[in-house]
Length: 347
Ligand SMILES: [Zn+2]
Image (cartoon, rainbow, N blue to C red; front, top):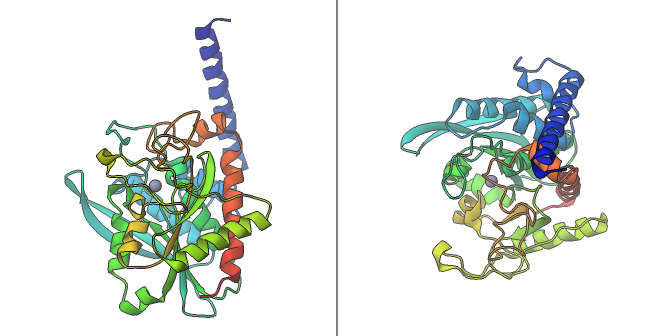
């Protein structure tokens, strides 16, 4: 069999699978939704983490902050939280990105706990507008980065809505992360001093599934953050699963301004953690990547395909074709560990 024919057959088979999958998903969806749009039909009450991922990454799709699809994503997330029994707050903000003013919003849902201390569970929902090297990425659907993170936030919010938790849980889907943490920056800058001091820990979910190794990191010089990371890794171990961390091998590269990133840590400025770090709020960070590749800075997330984030490969179709079942398994591990952590931890 020659190479060209193999490629053609592979492509044809892939298209057939995709068509079948789309028709099955459509047939299986119950129809109807809070907003009445076709997109929300992907997710029914009691949905799995994976179904939220599909709803956002395929149902909404590309969602660059400040575009119409970005706003569709905002509304979709608010709809999911409403279906889960919350009255979400849509916190609108504007920023300048790519030479124009863009409108985006954070979507916030609060689950009161026994205490006023807050554990904030956050994920950005916008998808990137270009690759890391500045090339257009029109097919990118932000599946791993960061529909996976939003799926975890939405699933946890739904699961825990009527569960008693020691601390108050605040679930936030942040807008505009890809333009420089705009949504989380706006969020922390508009907290009252009391609200700010009540946040005991921020749990950041940025690409918590997809990459080769499921990891959790703590922030620098924070005993609270360190203890949380260790506890989360222990819970995973007790569940028979594994949460790795940064092995501390980073090669300093002056061009990127990377210093060696210490064992167990990651750079706050890689994600919305930057905004919380600026306010001295402890954080932990979930991410699936591969710290054994490149300059060991966690940017190259797979051995087989290199960097997938921000590229046209970051679609559910690509992940499932090349890494079947991986995302669903990793999401399961993250949600189970966080479910236990949030129902037992008291600050
Ligand atoms: Zn991201």
